[in-house]
Length: 302
Image (tube, rainbow, N blue to C red; front, side, top):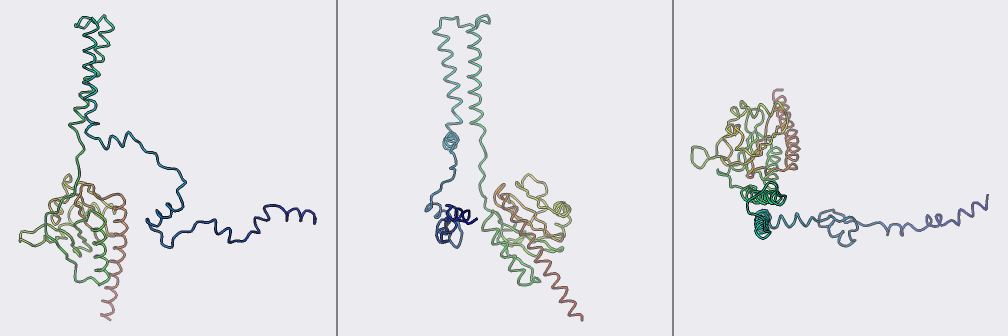
């Protein structure tokens, strides 16, 4: 038994376990106390990235950098092929008139068809181009209206909501209707018939519209990526006339947030998910405010 114990004690694994812990700590990488993009990049540069590197598609890079040349390339190939077929027909000594019994004539006809197809494809590529999407300047007046009946913590959260949206997304207008009244209208609003003033939000008319009823029925966010294609835009007269995209975010079962953007399809999937989470947080804040007001009213009655 003692001999077996001595053998185990002299095993290399046992000596590894008895090494000081400071040596093991030196093998573990150290990270900065605050993890940011800059700190991660600095750490990768200092330690050296040893993982798999992404492969580059040189053909795709060349096409993206030379769009006009790539679209014109079928025309050049088709034209060169057409000239080559005609030149081969002229110098081969075959009669210029096509002969169905000749295999050379059938091959020339096939080559001519392919050359013409390439030319037509190039013309189509040049005529059909993706439409560039750019930002627009909202046509309206600046507006900042918040209900005076709201507590200070609700006002602070509404301002934070607006500042966050306008800073990181394409949001340029925001309207919040809660419990049959407009509690917030910020950003650029449509200009009313009275020059220089923002169009007021008719909460009653908005609630009676199909957009509001559809959102309340589904209790889910609705994204109108291109507002000009939707007939329901007539129910949003308080937004600028050239509003490009709109997100309709329900706030619980008592309200809705109308968020207008200045770019077609400008709200990404991450923006939509983030707005949905902020809507839930705003619903909790407004519900807390309503409950606090009810308790205050009951205490005053007592």
